[in-house]
Image (cartoon, rainbow, N blue to C red; front, side):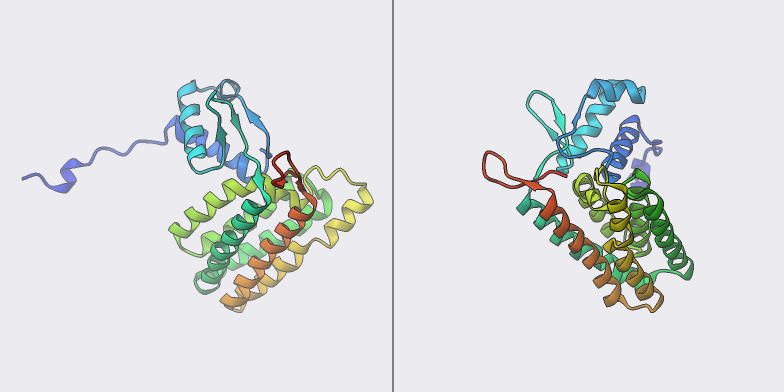
Length: 246
């Protein structure tokens, strides 16, 4: 009788499809792709120097999670989201990311917390010198995901990443990407940005091992950003359903 281990096969290295998936995922998470952006599978294949097959496979995986739309004619687009859909996604993010913050306050090592503090300081520095830049978006994402990793829950991390794939093209509008405002107004927004205070509250809660305070800080960061985006980034469409278009 064969043993279970007899059925195993050597583990494969990361496939080309996985590499393309990771690249597109990072573009969605970082806000490099925006709502209504269209993707050419052929251009992607040429830029990544791969064949069309791994690109199609990666796009299909992202479409299955709702992060991309694929039309019957194989056109690929970053989907628009209605105001109600964005509100619903925000609620789920507050629950899951708040729980991750709560767990991080209980489980994170001292070095984890010190690292999160460093990332919070880096975010403030980048916001001061480059508000509305890709660097500011990256600094915010790095801080949040360091927190979620510190929760020590792979399953929760997987859920949060999926939510960010759908929200990333929109939520980064809160940091002023391509805001197109005068420099003086831009700096005013930067200095008073709500995330500064929420990140400070988060770091204090982590240091105090206060899970409830940590959950509140991250949930309020998400809620406030969502309210700002819904107030300034929505428009009416022909079907009278408000879409979020940063």
